[in-house]
Amino acid sequence: MPVGDRTRDRGHGRKETRTVKAVTLHTPGGIAFSHAQQAVRITRTRTSGGKTSRETAYLVTSLPAADAQPADLQKWARAEWLIENQVHHVRDVTFREDLHQARTGTGPAIMATLRNTAIGWHRIHGEANIARANRRADRRSHDLITAVTSSYPRTQ
Image 1 (cartoon, rainbow, N blue to C red):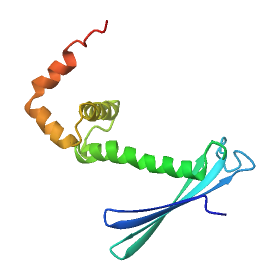
Image 2: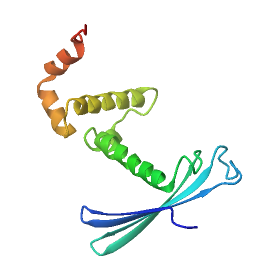
Image 3: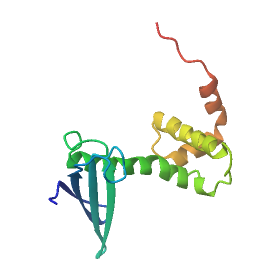
Image 4: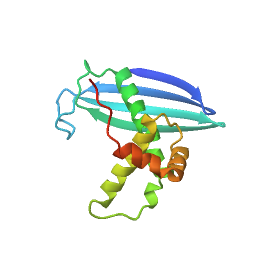
């Protein structure tokens, strides 16, 4: 199968090559996914400090090749990590979500919603460091209460 897209990056002390191969399924749903149009393999090869590691991810998509070229698939897969780094990492590290004890009922969903709301609030207000913004909010909680309870300005 020919390589559909290949990207090379350098950064954070490592070199990374990502290769995408995609194949159109001639029998949609023939791989136990009823709407699958393409099967995709993304191979990531990283070299850091003389060590090389390889990771392979397999994906399926309901988009036909005309709507999802290998370069698009590559970009969308990379965007998934952006979400991971911007939200999930902050929830795990700053809010210590993995250590939270709520395990039953709606407790976990409510806590996740509150954490996401706090992250979104800080990002909307231009904060890049959520931990620092939380510490500031802890010291000035009346500012948050005022901001949330005040009425929005009316437009004419």
